[in-house]
Length: 186
Ligand code: PRP
Image (cartoon, rainbow, N blue to C red; front, side, top):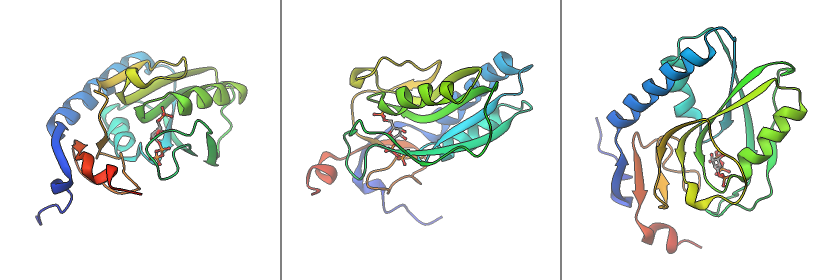
């Protein structure tokens, strides 16, 4: 396999492919036990969730459905604007459904605080939040995840779905970016 041209922009590996695989399977097992009789609807929050969602639903062999919603609050920057906009809405009626909302990262909380309320107003019976990474130090809104892959340090991370200016999502592990990459950016 050709060598990655992205590794050189990363300071270190924070969570390896192996660590991620193991943790995702554990989460899948826990969700299986919690939702085995509920026919849940997995709702992935695009785009960051796409790899985690794909792995999580396969790690949780439960009869369920899959849906996506896309929101934007960061633009191309790396600080949340706090202004969450839906850029691709749900296509299903979620009235009375048990939702498992799948996120790559819970940071300021702006996105999930908004979405949890949105799903409730759309009639969801329950909203369970699963996030691969949680950065509790960064929280601005009163929101907690029900299932957390890793509690991450307050560093700029990319890979496994997480981006910097839409790039690095395809790095197969989660790594810390070299500060000079984003600090020198306009
Ligand atoms: C990222 C991430 C979460 C959100 C978390 O999305 O995927 O949805 O930020 O941050 P918050 O807790 O501060 O709201 P982003 O808006 O960067 O879009 P993306 O998923 O397309 O990368």
